[in-house]
View 1 (cartoon, rainbow, N blue to C red):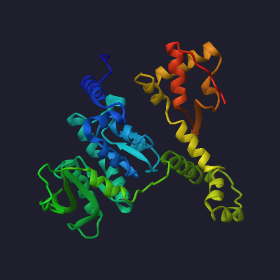
View 2 (cartoon, rainbow, N blue to C red):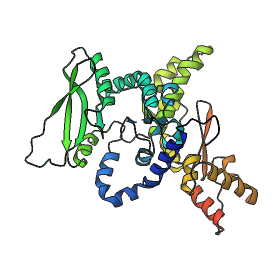
View 3 (tube, one colour):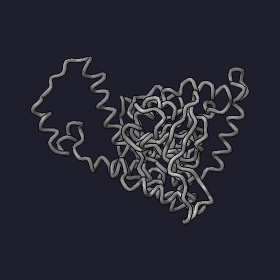
View 4 (cartoon, helix red, strand yellow):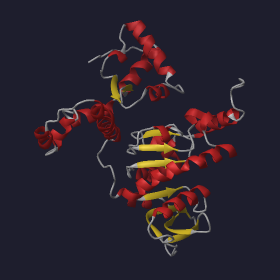
Length: 355
């Protein structure tokens, strides 16, 4: 922390990250104990296409474990899939040095926000957008809405498909809150957006969950499928001669089973079940074992291999499964792996089933 090449802001960012990690509930049940169980259930039922957050904490990853966090500058470098992702545009406590906190951080972020606005314009064109936890006067919201308004054919009108949800403790059954709000943006212009005021967000979340975008779809499988298709079209085909069997392609899109086989998936249900069973990354496994990162998991896996000769990472089994996305191998682990490594490390009796 005190090396010459460490920025002067590193320490306060580290302390903020440590504080947020300490006060953030560790499980969804911990949240329910605080009286928000029904509201959280309604929020999770929305199954959003994507989430954009300025929060640093890990609450969203806890509530939406199947969504992929995209943190900070990764937004600029990653593939434009925009499916099943949590865009943490101000950074994350998992890498405290890059969180957006100081004036210079915000200045740099403002220069890069055009890319974020472009993302929002894409979402806005296909899905409803709902801003939760922000005031309509928030400068970031005003700037983004200004960019959206600039792209509309009719300037200054109400922006369809965009909602702002605001907490109002004084709302009751006799209240008649406004349905829209005029927001001053940049260059003395203004926009109108749909406004929802409520003292209980449960009914709002239930309304948005009534027609979920990705109902009964595993976002991780969908992301992997899209990523491989993207690479095939963008990189593989242009670099080599491809003999296409158009008769096979035409027949392959006639039903879901044959279409899945075009991607090399023989049994979608089996793949989905395997993905749901092996749901922890190495970092998540380390945290389940009581650590703060992947190091704890790696240490115990190595120790188990040395003690028993069983290396769970060497093959796909009930404890571990390897996924290859974009030529990169990702290791995924199950609750059985958590149980086995816990018992091994604590000296309890255990059995290994490598099938």
